[in-house]
Image 1: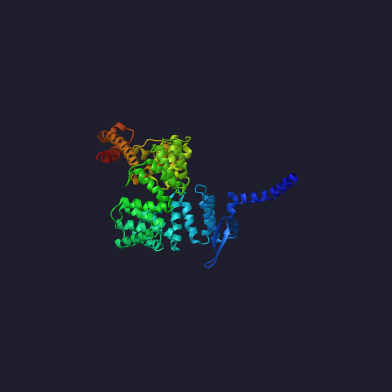
Image 2 (image 1 turned 45 degrees about the vertical axis):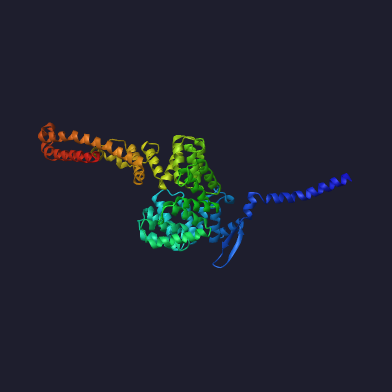
Length: 488
């Protein structure tokens, strides 16, 4: 009997075990990806629901809607995990769909490209894509293009009326970002107050309907005092409601308020908790805030290794300030192995995104010769021009200095104090040198005028009436120009 029972249990186990393993396998990430489903718009009236594998097959056949969904799949990351995205594949699918005129994919392509924009040419291409999507009615593109126009990115001329018109179109499609932008512009008197009040009313109504985005925007309006009087207590109430409704950026904002002590007492531990909540919910920018706490030792023990790790997490997802600070830590060898080459890579990307600190540190790297620069051959031939300007340097050094000053000036134009000081210091040193040089050659020019015979083998007439006066005028110009730069 025992033997029969044992055999029966063995047979039952052999039959049930494969079934259990099949159930287990169906819950593994690999198979979960196969069972994920997305909705594909096949035309204006019909929609179908497909697995990721089926979506990819349809995308490979050229279906723009499927290509768009594949791009979004890679943009979200594996199983929606932030930090595990594949931006190259996302760009690939967005581009294929965008080439077919798919509106949301045109905007998506612009968004992905904006992560790695390095030059003005990159920004111009992004603005072009925003413009195409905006013309087709994409509300996010309308908002983004308006911001480009207002900030004069991509060499766009600042046109407030054009920006307001784009924002109104975006707001008409219930874009909270556009509404708050109109409220802010009304506060600055860049658009009529009535438009601002209408947007404020829309945001308040949506916030009362438990819309977390609108609740967050109402928090911003009360915190900043746009149109209505500033009220930090009410701002915190709105932020808290948005956080309770699952908005990660609201968690990050409350953390910032605790860190700065705005409307609440400073509490770094509480700030850290909210930042961690935000990161867990997918708010990659909160990694920057956590990195700051660990780098400065606020509410936690100072830890450069953790700071560098958090900066990297935010930097790889496109946060310019984190790119700068990660590059700076690489440059200094703090919390991570020192590397000028890798630091230059991150600082170049941050500088291209317009971060003033990134532009400053990149400029300093160029001026210190830590980054090689191709110098112009014409630099070798400008001997007399460099002599007149008092610049006696090697062409390589000149090229590095020129590139460094270019980035320092970009940072200074944004109000970066240290960049302004460094540029003023360089100007002051040059001005004093040119002043001394001008004072030195003035008596020499006078001497040539009075005693041209000192150079008897040359033409005394030319020396006296052409060379000497020109030399005198040059010295006078150098003295006056230098004094104008030195004297306040």
